[in-house]
Image (cartoon, rainbow, N blue to C red):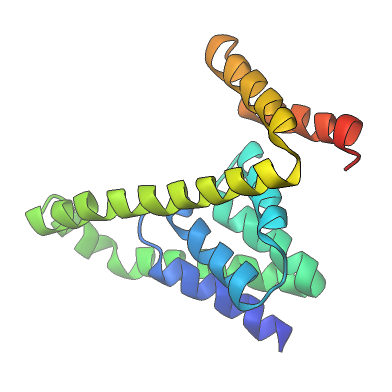
Length: 177
C-alpha cells in the first residue's frame, strides 16, 4: 500500500501543480506531513533546504528522497516516475498545441493569476518554518543564522549550498543535531 501512496502523492502534486517545482512543494508538504504523517514539517523543511542546495529541479530530488525514506529503492523509483512521468507525457503529446497557444491572451492571463497564488503558498510555508524555528531552536540561534545568512548571501555572494552546509555545521556544533 505504501508504494501506491508514494506514487499517488507525487503524481497528484505534479498533475495539479502549475508553475514548476516551487509551486508543487506546498502540495507535496501537505500530503507528506498532514495527510500521511510520514514526517513532521521541520523534517520536510530540512529536506526542502537540502534539495535546494543541490543542482537541478527540486521536485524529483524530494520525490526520490521521500520515496526512498518511505519505501526504499522502489519507493524512490515510484516517486521519480510519478514526478517526471506526467510532465514528459504531456510535453510529448501537447508540444504542438503549446507552441500554437503560448502567446495567447488567455494563457498569459492564467499565468499572471497563478503567480501570486504560488507566492502566497511559498510565503505561508516560509512563515510556518520561521515560527517552527523560533520555537524549536530559539530566537538567539535563529537570529544568528538569519543574520549570517543574509550577510553571506547579499554582501559576500556565497552560494546558497554553502549556507545550508554552514547551517548544518552550526546545528551540529551548537544545537546538538
